[in-house]
Amino acid sequence: MKNRNLPWFTLATILTCILQITLPSGHCPEWLNLLGFLPLMGLMDSEVVNEFRNGLTEIKDGISRNETKIARLEKENDRLASECNTIRKISAARSNAGSPGNHRPGMLSDEAAGALGAAFIIGIARKGQLEAICPTAHIRDSVLRQACGFAGMETRAALTTTDIPLPTTYGSEMRALIANFGVVRKAMFPYPITAGTSKPPRWGTRPKFSSIAMSAAFPQLSPTITYASLESHKIGGLIDLPREIDDSSIVVMGQFLARYGAVEFARAEDTWGLLADGSATYEQVKGVVQVCQDNGKVVQLGATKTAPSDALLADFRAMRPLCATPVLSTGKYYVNATWEQRLRNLKTIQDPEIYVQNGPGGKPFLDGYEVVWTEVLTPYAVTPAASKFIAVFGDLSFWWMGEHMTPRLDTSREVFFANDQLAVRFIEEIDFDYMDIGAASVLQLADA
Image (cartoon, rainbow, N blue to C red):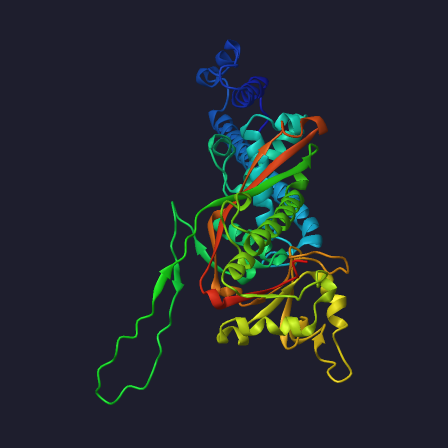
């Protein structure tokens, strides 16, 4: 550009160019457009104006690009802030719950607990009841957004779907958690119940293997097979929750629901699996104790021995010969945890190892066999409890535990309306039957 002094009309035209570039489209007055014709009238140096116009255009383009970048950075910053907030909440919960994949025994992983809590929140929202527990709009939106994030779905899909099942991996975690608190789920052989009645095999008369001469024909050695019967029987109950919920409590609430449900499921499963007597209370299902009683696998204490304290070591030992021989290498004693002190008193100077409270793997052992504690069998006492069953011996892996799908939940706010609480309903479908009649025996108190 040449070095010269610009006359007043040149400065006016430059100002016109600036205003035409910077003003939004459609907002430029007519007089500015007229001033733009000055260069055509030969009143100024067009080279100067064009250079200035091009420079201003480049500046405007640069500003537009920067605005786009700033908007993108603001959006990214919001996303990172949201993720950091989520990580902070999960980290706070992990201080109590352990880390994923290596969570503390008796707890779900954070992901599974979050999915369980999300199923509860989404169930409430689907019924249009989320306002009752989250009256503030921004908290309600935050809770629902967090729940949908744990469930891995969009908000619209979450509110329109008819069922929010736990993912398969999390359903397995729930089963494992129930097994932590119970006995039969951990010990019995699992079998999936499909529609109708499932019929897993039951051992009958076993074939006897024998010597076969060189090139001789094999005799028929097929076992006699019968079939067990497994049908779906619903068990479950209600868990009450406070109405006050925020977005940072979804994982903790999921852990609470999971532990509460697992403890109650475990107690119900142990009661059915061990004590179901075939009555209408148990929908004609028979558990270990009743099947042993029906088939003569019972050791009953002598007359007048009606108190649990009357049982002696010899009575526990008499249970073992009633089982099949293979069970003697894998069998366990199942008794109420209140027997721990009594079993310690069975020790003698001659045989101090009759009961070992901290045996291999930190587990208790009676007469060389592992002891498994369960709360559903008769507790130890010195008062009469005629005809009650106080112990089971055997290998319960020779029993079938049938299960239809995974435990499921649903929600309601009407059930505990008087207490201003929410209700969560847990349901599972199970059944039990034996694989081999010689798998177990029981110890029973005298009738009188």
